[in-house]
Image (cartoon, rainbow, N blue to C red; front, top):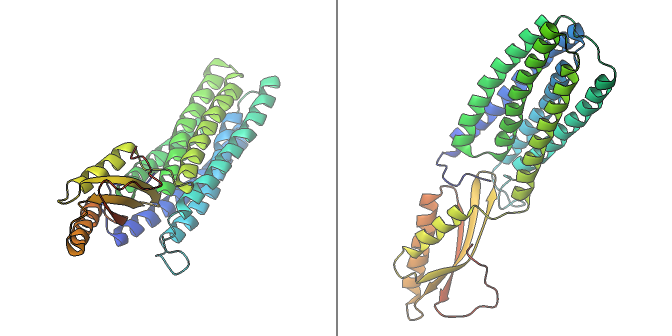
Length: 307
C-alpha cells in the first residue's frame, strides 16, 4: 500500500523512480551475462535456477520501467485520479513472472533428483554467485532508499524479488560448495527446490499486495485512525463518519463526512470543512481529500464503519 507518511516533491519522486527502474534493468542484464557463462561451464541446476530467475528479472524490470513511466503521467480528462495504479498492474505482472520461474525450477530440480550429475567448474560458479550477491545487495539498498522516499508499489515489488535473488544466489553458492568439497550431488537439486519454494512465496506476496491496491483496499487502521483524529481536532467538528480511503500509486484518496452543529452558518461550516481538508493534506502530502458536511445526530441510510 502507499506510504501515507511520505513528503516529497513530484520532480524528485520521478527522478528516484526512473533511477531505480534503470538500475534494476542494468543489474539484471549484467547478471544474465555472467550466469550464462557459469551455467555453461558448471551444468549446475542451482546455477540454472539463478539464471532463470535473472532472465525473468529482466522481463519484470522492463515491465516495471514502462509501468512507472506511465504512472508518473499527470491526471488527464480520461484519468481524473491519475495513472498511479499502473504500478500495481506491474506488480501483478511481476508476480506471474516470478511464479513461472519457480515452476520451471521445480521441474528441472525434480529431474535432477532422479538423475543426479556432478557439478563441473564449481569454482567459477561460486565466483559468479558472489558477484551476483554483491551487485544485488547494492541494488536492493538503493531500491530500499527509493521506496522509503516515494512509497512506490512497483519498486517495492521489484525490491522484494531482488531480495529473494540475494538469498537465492547465496543458496546456490552453498550448494556448489557442498557439491565440490563433499561430493554430495543431491544438494544441488534439493537447493533448487528450496529456492523455488522461496520464489513462489515471494510471488504470492507481490500478487496479494498488488491486488489489494487494485481492489482499493482500505489504508491501514493506524492511518485511518490518524485521519479521524486530525478531523476531530478541528474546531466545530463534532464527529466523523463514513470514512473511505484508498491508495493510488504513492498518493491516497480520502472521503469522509463531518458532523457539525446544525445551527452553524454556511460560511462557518464551510470554513471548518476547509480546515479539515487542509489539515489532512498537510499530514499526508499529495492526498486527495473530499469532505461532506452533516448536521450532527442526523441518521443517514448508509454508514461505513471507521475501522
